[in-house]
Length: 413
Image (cartoon, rainbow, N blue to C red; front, side, top):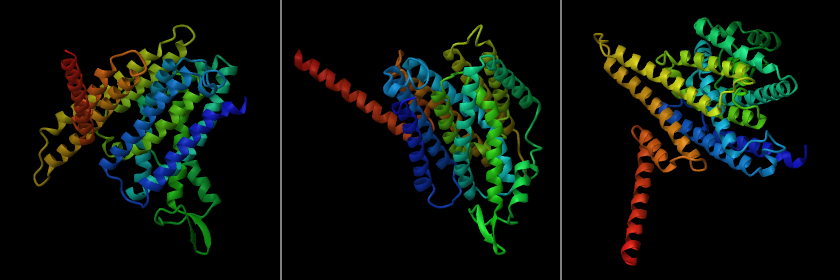
C-alpha cells in the first residue's frame, strides 16, 4: 500500500474528528437536557452529512480518485458503490435502534439525568469507532481468506433474529455485568454521581463515578450489538471502506436520534419485530450470496419496506388505543396528542429523508430527480418549518426561471 492509498482513510477520519469536535464544542458547551426538537434537528444534520458523503462516495468510485476503487476498496463503479453505502447506512441505522432500548434501560437503571447522558454517549461513540474498526478489519480479513465464513455470518444473523424474537429487554440488570464487577474490583467507585465527571478525588484517592460505570456498560453493549450488525453489512458490501464509513455515520446519527426515540420506544411496539425480519432477510441473503445473489437494489427496497410496515403498524395501533382511554382527573388527551405528534414527526422525518436521499442520488444516477426531490421536501414540509421554507424557496426559483424563459421567448419573437 502506497502513502497515496491512505489519503481517503485519513480524510475520512479527519472529517469525523472535525464533526465530533464541533459536536463537543458547539452543540454541547454545557450540560443540559436535550429536548425533542433539538434532538431531531441534530439528527437531520447528521443524516444530511451521511447523505452528502454518499454523493462523495459516488464520485470517488466513479473517477477512482486517490485510488479508490482500485487500490482502496473493491473495484466498483460510482452508482454501485453509492447504492451499497446507502443500503449499509440504512441497515446499520435500523439495527442499532434495538441498542436504544438497552441504552435507555441502562440510563434508567443507574438513574442518570438527561443532562449527563449526552456526555456518556459522546465518549461511547469514540470507543465504538475504535472497536468497530477492529472488528470490521477482522471480518474483512476472514472473508478474504476463508470464503465459507460468509455462511457462518449468515447463520449468526438468523440465530440473532430468533433470539430477538423470543427475548426481551425487561430483565436487563447492568449492575451484574462482568464489566461492572471487574471495574469495581480494580478501582474504587463513588456511591453517587459527581456531576458529569467520570473520575473524582474521593476520600483522599482517585475514584471512578457511577457515570464511568455506565460508560463501560454502554461500550460493552455496543460490542455485543456489533457482533450482530457488522456481519449484516458484509451481506450488502465487502468493501472495507464502505463498511466502515457507513457504520460510522450510522453511529453518529443514532447518538442524536436516541434522545428523540428513547421516550417513544415503548410506543413503537412492532419496530423490534421489523428488525427481526430485517436480520433474517439479511442472513438469508448472505447464505444465498454464492448461489442466488440478491441485488442491492432489491435488498434496499425490502429493508425500507419492512421498516416502514413496522413503524406504520405501531403508529396505527397507538392511534386505535389512544381514542377510548379516559380517566377522571388525568389529562390523557394532551398526553395522547403529544405522543402522536412526536410519532408523526418521526415517521415524516424517516419517510421524507428517505425520499429526499433517493432524489439526491438521482442527480448523478438515472431517475426523475426533479420530481423526487420536491416530493421529499413536500413530505418533510408537512411537519417541519425549515422544510416548508426550503420548498417555498425552490418554488420561487422555479417560477423565476420559468418567467425568465418566457421573457426570452417573447423577446426573441
